[in-house]
Amino acid sequence: MSYGLVEYMRTLDMLKENGWSPRRCIPHGGHQMSLNIAAGLGLGGNESYPGVFQPFGGFADNCKVVDSYVSLPDTPGVGFEAKANLIEVFRSVAE
Image (cartoon, rainbow, N blue to C red; front, side):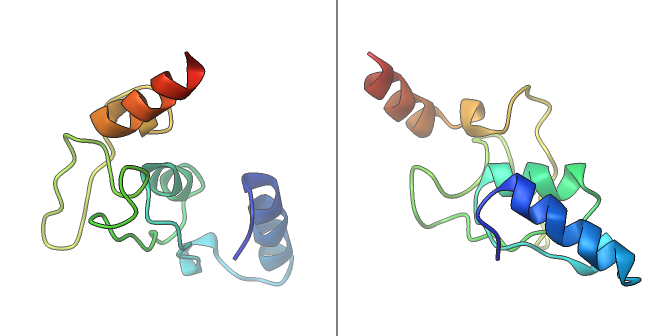
């Protein structure tokens, strides 16, 4: 478990120095940002639970879980932008 991308990158560097593949890492997160990080770093996947911790949990509105897999949306950003309920919360806080 890490508390940020920089810390996770340090962990991956240490694992690489010791002969471990990043494909052996499956981070816990449960939200779109963790999915994007796992894809961007070439990890083995990420633990997700799309139905909880709303509006923060889950994936972009147009992502469908099929046979326990989900594809990345073709949307710029970390994924929060494609969740209507979440972006509404962010906008209300910013006003």
